[in-house]
Length: 86
Image (cartoon, rainbow, N blue to C red):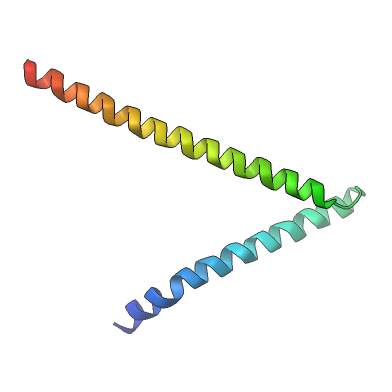
């Protein structure tokens, strides 16, 4: 009971904090790699461009997945119709 209550209240918070922490760690890791390769520091426009590309790619993936599920639903309906007439 106590564990269930704890997970109900703190699991979303824990997930949000871990996602934010993962982004910070990933940025620091990429910054260290950039420093070792002696590249110039990232400009704000570079970060915004990368974030925009990542969001558009994610949106395209989600749209393709939704379209695939819709097509699968339609095909399943036709398959059921063919089975009824046989």
